[in-house]
Image (cartoon, rainbow, N blue to C red; front, side, top):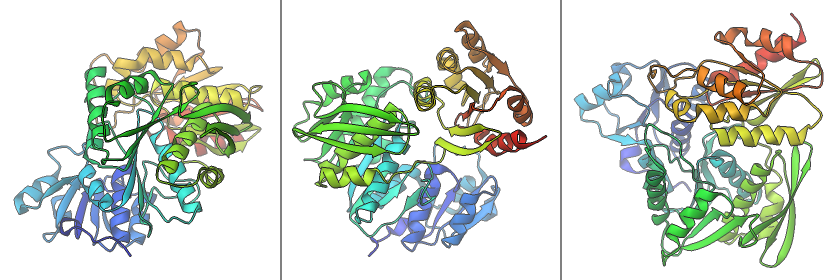
Length: 465
C-alpha cells in the first residue's frame, strides 16, 4: 500500500520536470496516485516515460502551463527567478516547494538510506536499489541517473525502505532525516555555492547531524575529506559510525580488488569473516562504492552474504562507464565524470580493464565556475589518456565568466605532456575521432553535459563515411 500523499503534493507542477532529480520525484508521486504535471525545455524520453505514468508534460516554459488548481510548484536550484511559471505561481498564491523538500516528504515514515559524497552517489544509490530489489524487499528509490536494467531513475516500492541520492551541491541534502547516511568522499566542488572546504565540512556535518537517533553513518576510511569529517562527528552520541575501505582500521575492510576485464572481484573482511563478491563494473572506486552499499544494507539488518550476492546483479547506470557499442574494432564508452577526481578514477579504471588498448577521450568541461577552479587539474587528468579531444565548456545553469574557456584545460593538459586537440564544433567530433581511432582502441566520451549524445554518432562514423 502506498504511503499517503501529503496534501501539498496531490497536484504538483514541476518546473524542469525532465531533470534527473525532478523526474524521479515526479515518477514516484505519479505511481503513488498524485495528479502530476510539469514542463521542460525540450522533448525527451524522460518526458514520454512520465506521460506513460499519467503525468501531463508541457514542452517549453509558459505561464499558462501552470493549472490554477495546482497544489504546489516544485523547483530545483537551477530554476531562475524570472521563469514565467514561477511568476504565475506567485500571482495565483500557489506554494513553491524545493525539490529536496518534496523528496523529504516522500521518505516520511520509511526507513531511509541517504547517499552523499562529492563523487559516486548515483552509482552507490543504484547498487543499493538493485540489490534490495533483488532480495525481494521492494524498495522505493530516487537516483540521479537511469539504471541500466530497469531503465529508470526512480520507483515507488511497496517495501519500507527508501534509498535516495543526497545532493550536496545546493545544501539540499540537509533536509533529510535518514536512518542510514553514506558519505563516500568530501571534496571541494560546486564553487558557485561553496567558497571553501570549511563550508563543505560544515554542510556535511549538518547532513550527518540529521541522521535519526540510533542511526548509522557509513563513511570512507581512506579518503582524506571523509576522514576529517569522521573526526568532526565522532562525538555525536546518538550516531553509530561504520568506516569502510582499505585502511587496516576500517570496520568493513576492503581486503582485495581483482580486475576481471570490465568487472571486479571484491573481497572484504566483515565481522572477522572474509566475503567475496562480484561487481559488474570496472575500477577500484566502483568496488569501494559497492562496499559502502554493503555496509549500509548491513546497518539496516540485512544479512551480509545475501546482500553481497545481490550486489552482483547490478549492471551499471547509464553514463557511468556505459558501453555504447563497438564499430570497426573500436569500443565507445560513456562517462559522466566531470570533476578531476572522477576523471582520474574512470581513466584509471579503463586502463585497468584494457591495458593493451589506446585510450582516446572526448571531454566536455561542465560549468564555467568548475573550470575556473579546477581546469588545471582536469588537464592533468587528461594526461592519462593517449589522446584527447576537448570541447567548449557546457554552461548548464551558468552564465559565461570572462576569460574562462576550455583553453585553461588544454594548456594544462599539454603542460602535462598530453596529446590534445581542441574542437569548437561538437558536430565535427565524429569525423575527428574517426581520423584518430584504430582497431582495438577505446573511445571515452566524458562530461556531465550533452557530450553523451556523441556516442552513437561516433559509432556511425566509424562504421562508414
